[in-house]
Length: 613
Image (cartoon, rainbow, N blue to C red; front, side, top):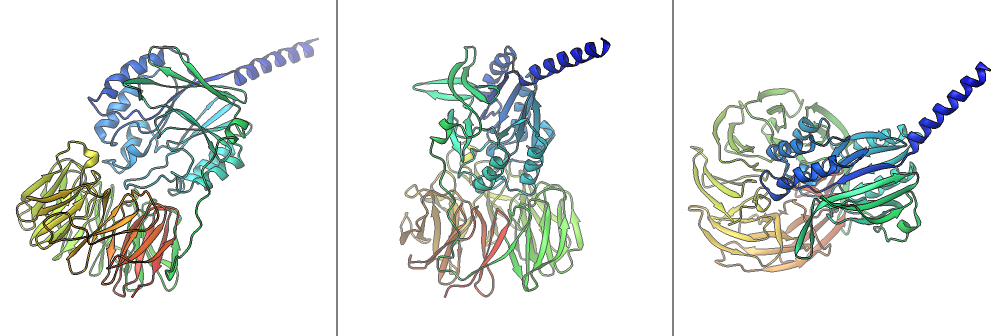
């Protein structure tokens, strides 16, 4: 009798456990909060949190773009709001936390306890969140940064019989450079659904047969009015019920899907397959594939290739022997391109200061830790390194690492490479200004602003092109601007083509080149007193926002896009070649002494394009 009693009790407890495990799971999905201290979204968050706390949720998901620019003040403000939520949370970051981050992405972990990769188990569901960048530089997203997908697959393997829900700020479509690699992984483990934001509007999408559930943004236009709210998801067995929830109002049902390979989802058109690689007339060779993402240019010198990666490594690669000669490890990803100076390789890092290495052995020659958090590129002129960090431009003696002067200009990062001309240093920063500093004294000579207070329109990632006593720039405001070098006076300013950050200059300093957001290359005579086009050539790849600078040799101008394509155009505007070498954005195009072009791509590959005559 006792044995049957024990068996009955075991069955009862098993039923209770099963019932608790399989009960409906109610989730609040927040995305695209875009909080800046003092903005309306900031003031609305108190009401949002109160609304969430008044409901019974098993989990609150925050799917990225918590802030506008990922600054410390914005992250702290968002954290103070979100910590008031009384329910369990899972939070990852979006492109607005990573693209313009003041800390290079470090400080998200300080506030939220992880780097964007995190999991939560609720009932019969495992929620797996991971970030997709882009990291520091304007590009498409990628979930291929270092060991990120390795980590994701490890979590999927742990799921067992639990239903898996993916969380990524980006939709799993062609806005992600390695989308097919991700969806193949998700399909292999029969992922139940993928939750995301980014598009601000709630909708159902098809991510290669995986239900893509897009949450609404905090603020959503509704005719002449603006509504504030979030999405509510109820997971019940194989079904997912999706609703809209405005603050202070009942939830409104939107649709129901049945999870993996749902017929409604499969009736929605999914993104087309990625275009295959092709050389397009180039003589090209893939030199290496790194095991991490690459965000720096590839520097070639005496048979060695120097670059940094997202795993915090700086490497010297022997091109002829096809092997790494030496590798140095640092604590954070390397975003600033290592600079060759005589026998040194100067490396600016996120947390280890500036380090000069022997370029042949990789051993430390000197280190300066007075400043950290370098995400932009520097330039060497007359034995001195000019490089910026947050709110500060530095002049450093290359041979010793001694700081000659520090100009505390403002609060933004000078992310693009500065330019030295006529004893002056010109650079832009993410604080709305272009600056000109005296190279000897470090004193500011002038500053220029485009008339906007919106930091997203700053000339923060420009390379000023200087010739004929003129400074030529384009910025995210899509204007082309010509400025007098001596006085900072605006000579002309035009919004004719949709230009954005990517520029170049001819070797003789007479022609300014810019890439448009429509995939065109435009040529402008620098000495003209108004906007004048020599020619405009359409390279045929359509919309583009890649930051990669243009590079000119004596006869050819090269430019690259966000999807791994490179175009070569002659000095008269005729297309010579257009090839596709990767699926991600190019970082930089560097010509060596032979005229060969070395190009690195974010996905971790480096190619050599043979010189065109």
